[in-house]
Length: 106
Image (tube, rainbow, N blue to C red; front, side):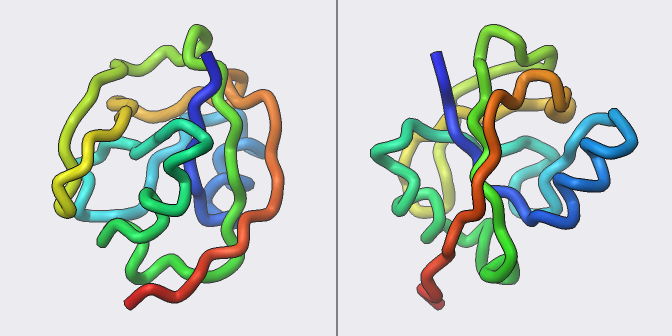
């Protein structure tokens, strides 16, 4: 199954180019990477995790079967349930990357 994560381009590219784990740079996620189905991307982008991350973002297409970190469901600050990846995202689980235009919601 494919799940999706909205990532800061610079943070993702640093992890990818060094073939190291990607970690989402938000103190609100306790080190977990928020992911969702494609249909819920706009809802995810409006979560407080993204308040300081509105520009130069990419959408990661993640093959859930290739994720090495722990996968779990958890609630967001806005009360919605999302997939989360704990322990970092291995770059080889990402199958596609595209630019993602964030709206300004805050």
